Image (tube, rainbow, N blue to C red; front, side, top):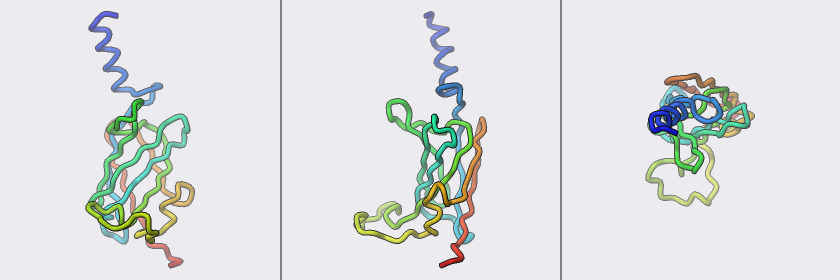
Length: 142
């Protein structure tokens, strides 16, 4: 292959991602009881099982998603498509937490948000930049 063609091909792969699915940047906010969720983890599970999941760390109510590339190196962004979303927030997710994460701790948000099947959270990721915000509600059965 000639060098210009190789560079062109590499550029196309970077812009479109693997298998023709474009990679898009995803950021957003997570609020609980009308306040930014101070810390936690957010996970996007693709409806298309051939795509990899993505995750992000919630800090001061904001997150940016990453997925793992072919060699397990983080890739900023995720493939376009439909996703089911789940969120976890435990004391040991707090930056600088020095307690024992092996001891069971209650979640700091309703437990339903930890389940991809029960959270009720979904997202559609499109080409380009995506701002996807989530508002978590207090569990009325508590």
